[in-house]
Length: 297
Image (cartoon, rainbow, N blue to C red; front, side, top):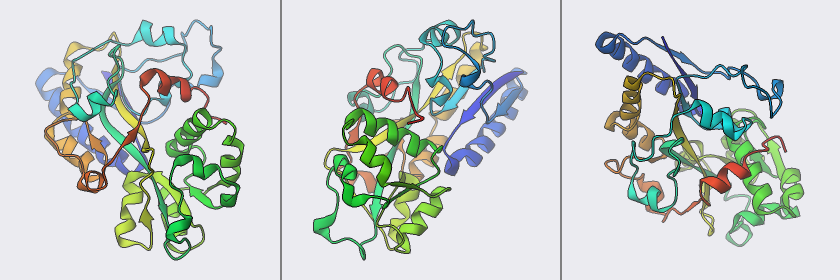
């Protein structure tokens, strides 16, 4: 039996799990490999010291999604247990040029999620809108920026990015942030005028078309998070076919419908993004991994 750990955003987790389960049934018929799909951490980082022997880590054959599974692990854990596959899953030219390829080949990108800032036009005039991310550290936004639960990936990532980018204003950004539970709560709170600003992943922010909210397009680009595939060194070689499935038209078109940037160049970037000249704020894998090492702040 092969273990597959899913670490996916709320809005796509159920559909992606069902697609993978169906693919797993096909794989079992074809190759005799049974997939066990899991959606939780196998071993909590706080139970292990940085220099521990790592025997506690029950390494999955494949990890799919955001990379918090790896954040607290020492670098040697990645090198010891996971497979380097540079070039095995090529990505679209725009993402390649933006540096969203892990040169070491451990983190194989299959989609990129921009984080969307949106506002209630009845509460803010054009002149009042934040223009760049640093504007969100201004004290005028104290307790006025709604985000999902503190432990959701969007707020965790944004705290990491803001701390790394604006260390002097980071404390103010924390004071400005209010956590609202599930992402739809954030959208509704801004729509109803309880908060002037909200931040979620782009899938939730895009419903501004049917709500009394509007998306902002920061002049310095949208912070973003890659979704990746990482294989164990002990994984059956045939499990790499799951990566081909995740890069297939079926899955990539589904991700495009969520307004994620699909990694496959065969699938167009969502028009909402191209029509607004999307620019991703990305400083490369090295900086990304450094920035997100401490997500508890």
